[in-house]
Image (cartoon, rainbow, N blue to C red):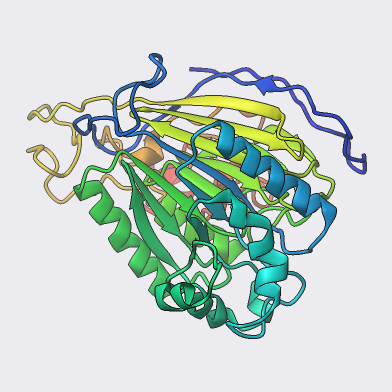
Length: 421
């Protein structure tokens, strides 16, 4: 389905409005990942009849706070008021908890003055990830300060949770995966693969990843560095539903890349000019927070300004298409299709045409770039360097090369010449 949308952003350098902004509604999207699971009974009573059955989970999230300013207080109070008026299960902090140099130890007074004083009244468990500014201080101090034992011994401590640099937890039918994007090393990659494989075996309906540094962004810092983008592409493509990040002092909603919906919400205390790019659905330079509701096969995202006024709303429907498992000459998946054998229908940058379930063969989202044959294959233009407008290239997927498959939209692929009659 082709989704049409209109641009909506404040021009770079513009100041924040002092009045609530108008909400923008967007068209629904489709999320396809994993297999359907049996519906679980709702634990919160009657729900919106338009939502499908299942266990609802509601969360609020923001990042880049810890400056002890009026803007931080306004956003924190708006988020607290919001959760008093509408049910929230938990909160996420997307890193850069204390500026500018993190904390010096688990008893640093800035934990109270720059963090707890703002979010204690929220009354929710808040899960934290570490930002680059947090890494300037004692990284492990956050883990120690909010260990269950230390939290119990410290009177008035808020329910903040960060059991390790990267970790995972469940809420309802949602698997949350918290990454340490400051060090995306091989050990974290192996751990992440294990978590996602187990989540699929367990039939968890939604997978939400949170980290500090964005994968794609049109803000001040831009897209992830090549090595980090390659990590994201290798481990997250077509395996998770949402990737939530901060770092940019703005709010952005981006077109999905290889099945992953991306939201940037690093405007918990400060704002910085942002812009629209080829993959933008919404962008604003205003401070504020975000909310994500996941209920059955329906998810709804909302962005709010510092007054608590809704700026943007988007509904996602997770549509799962059953795959046939018959001896028809096509490999539908590896579990019980007799045609599969040793064929791997995985997101590895190569489209195996015999695999109807290979995500590398999916059609690309609409884009003016001529190098858009498949969303997780980075193609090149003839006689030129990497196709700069190919979202797969920007996201860190390696350029097309001699890999045994002819990328037909890539005239420089040597496999195409070998395949010619």
